[in-house]
Length: 210
Image (cartoon, rainbow, N blue to C red; front, side, top):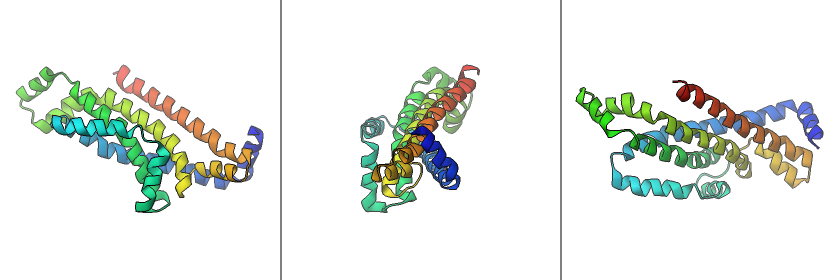
């Protein structure tokens, strides 16, 4: 069956590469948007404990919602296609980044922050020069988790017309064609594994080797 899937890819390279490109674009855009939204919010919440309690707990609850449910919720508001898939995947990617950013910044030693303030740093300077660099390993762990989740979750975008490698899985199920299903399933699994290893290697280089 796997050889049949490989033959299909060899016979239809353009179709496969287009789907792969859409999958990577959708995943990358969702992760980038999630970082842009969740990181600043996570830092801001460390200054507002009451708001942080509700927001962090809400984000934790969001992690229990199945990916397909989030995609389905987007349908009445945004219809089908790339846009609702992007919004849904961004929502799925936000909680790990938000929670890890909040936790990472909160774990910074207050004495270090006080020392930075004593040296004349403003609040923003303290955040960017002291707190974020110290919180970076924890924040990166959240980004790593979100990246793998988004790669896998983008598979379900096919169910609302978002495209990507998930199209091969839905087509394979619809026509009972196992090789076609594997054309989507195997690359998605490999992408998730490669993403985990790539982020893991980057994390070691950035933080464990200084």
